[in-house]
Length: 118
Image 1 (cartoon, rainbow, N blue to C red):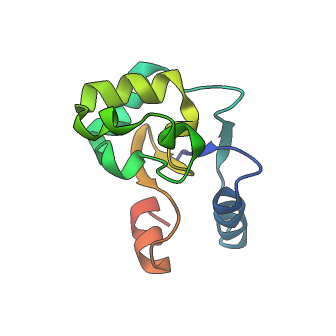
Image 2: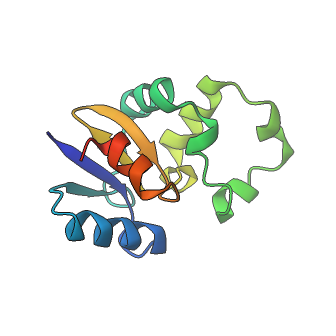
């Protein structure tokens, strides 16, 4: 199994996820989205797997700066926005064997285990 975690190192939720992965012996690769922003094709695949709504970082400055126009955006418009500003992506985002399986880290332990396959 190949697990990649996308996020930023100083994000509290990412830190919580890293600690959980390490305490459960789960190997993963971390990609800092501030340094290596995901390409539009990757984001398109993630949106197809998870939908754009759960992927939105609604608590961030970038999201609030979009104004009300974002309320009527299509999935394609969200893909473009995510590609232009990775801070719009909710963190962490987990990709298992090339497929996005989980975004955020608030589910119950058993749900996380199931989605990550651990």
